[in-house]
Amino acid sequence: MHYKVIEQAFTQDELDQFVNYWENNADSIYVTRGMNKLQEPWSLPIVQRIIKPVLDRYFDTSIKNLGDNIYRHDAPYYPHVDISKNIYPCFNVLIPIAQEKPVEQHFIIYDQWVNEYVGATWLGEWYEQQADFDNNKKRAYPYDDKIVEGIYSDKVLDHLTIQGKEHALFKGLTGVALDFKPGNLIIFDSKHIHATGTMTDGWKMGCTLRFAGDYYEYF
Ligand SMILES: [Fe+2]
Image (cartoon, rainbow, N blue to C red; front, side):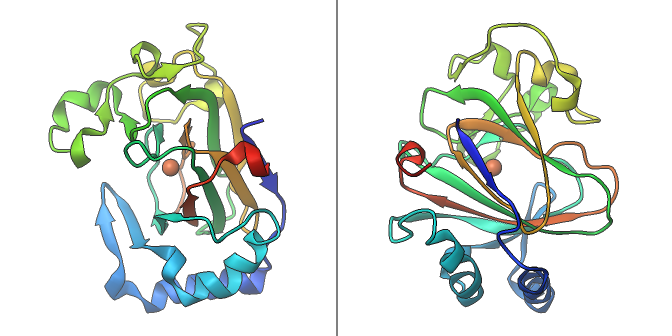
């Protein structure tokens, strides 16, 4: 299994501290493609105090941290993988922190994976219009991409699509739409394609960390 969910790993009080931190550090937030982000979360005292002790129960957190961010956004992001060039194995740690409204939100992890260790975002029909996107991580469609493995059908599974994005982006992708439930801990092998899921009402906020370790050694 390429992902693991640990329920209720954080208390409401701990999550509230992150929301307060975010609101008190607006100066450090930067915006890229509609995502608001605080960078290098692993170096933040609040992450070391609240998140590190929980992660210590599951893996050796002294392995190299590869960054990522605390984010808040109100529009869904495309299917992608987060791998720094040729730095693999690595795994993602995601902590849903808060959402604006009590609506169902999901985080989709697909069964399909990449066989080249580079960051990638599949933009579908928008591909040609994103010429400057972040060191050429942009790609068109997973189903005809040579770096994607594990696609054995042309089907589109409705619960794994994102409203407002073209269906072809999700052709042949299978997987799971996990609840984006504040306080849970989601860990997965970074080579797997993942996406935000449909967002129709309000923002969601989370913390994502990436570590240079072999997911299958720990989980
Ligand atoms: Fe990601």
